[in-house]
Length: 95
Image (cartoon, rainbow, N blue to C red):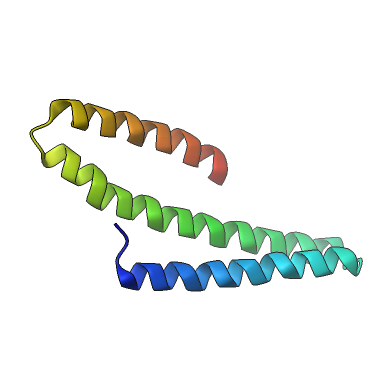
């Protein structure tokens, strides 16, 4: 679970990302120089990737850790499978 502080930080980041994406749209509409547009896209991608890493880190520290410390072997196995799947999916997003 995300702490209130983490939710605030992530919310702030997402609002900035939304602003960056809006800026990209304006740049496209206004025929801005391609390099400037690509730079803005790279910044938005990096910021969104950071949000993903923050959420993934919290998931590992809370949900995964809790399952691994528990006595339920089936739950541990399921969480490890979920974690492997998450890394595969997340790896594709951040590449």
